Length: 353
Image (tube, rainbow, N blue to C red; front, side, top):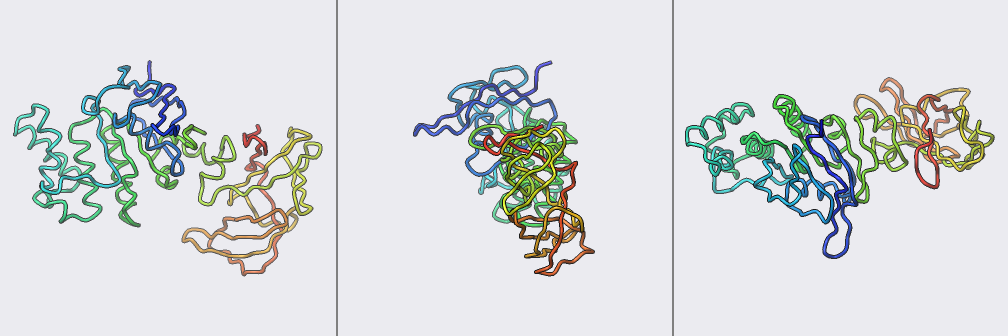
C-alpha cells in the first residue's frame, strides 16, 4: 500500500541560487501527525509551502493519495492551511470567514449553514459568530482559522507555526485543541514549528531538518533518546545534550580535556576521536563518580530543577528533583548513567552504535 503523502527527491532552489530544500524524501501515512522541526532557515516552511502549492518544486515530486500534485494549483489540492498570522478577512464576520471556503464549491446555503454550525459548536465559537476579526482575542483568531481550514473536510491539514504569536496558557489550550481535533477527524497533518515542546507533545513522528535536509525522522521518544547525529542531539531537548569530546583509549575509556577519564560502553572503537553525549537527566550526583563539578547556578523550573556545573571537561547541566537544592560553589562528584550515554564520531557528527 502506497503512503498517503509521498515526497520524493523534493528540491527547491530560489532565483538567487539559494537551495532551500535539498532533495528530501518523506512518506506520511493516512491520519499521521507529522511535525517538521528545525531552526530558522532549515527548509521546513518551504517544504510545507510546496506541499500546499504555494511554491513550485525545482525538481522531485509530491504525491497525495497516489496522485502527482507537484504542479497542481493550490485550490485543486484539497488541503487546509493555517498560518502563524491568522489571515482572516477583516470585513467578514466569524460565520462568514468560516463559510468562505464552502461558498465557492457548489454548496447550497443550507449546506453551508449546517456545516459552519457544526464547526462552530465543535470549536466553541457559538458566541462569536457575529463578531469581526478585530473584536477577537488571539486565541479566538486561531480557533476561527482552524475552523475555516477544517470546514471543507480537506484531505490534508497544513500548519505553519500556528501558535507562534500566542502566550503561555493559551498556547497549551490551542495545542490540546489541535491534537484532539486531529485525532477526532483522523486527518493527515503536517505541522511546522521550531518549538520542541510543541513537536514532542503533538507529533506521531518528528522530522528534524537542517540546511534543507532531513537529519532524522522518528517518534518523539526516539528522536529525543536515540539521536542520529550531534545536530539532533544538541537541537532536540531543552537544554540539549551535554557533550564531552575526547579520544578513545583501548575502547574502554574516553580521555577528555582537563585530565578527565570517562568509562565507555563495551565494544567502542579503540582509537578514534569521539564525542560522548548525555542528557541532563543522565548526569547523576555520585560520590565515586569520575567527574568533578562546581555548581554555578541552580534553576528551579517548577516540576524539576536544572543545575549548571563547571567541570574540567566543560559546562554540564544536570536535571534534579525539586526536593534537592544546590548552592553556588558546591563541589560534587558526578557520574553518567551508562545505559543512557550516546557516542558520536567527532569529525562527521554521526552516531556510533
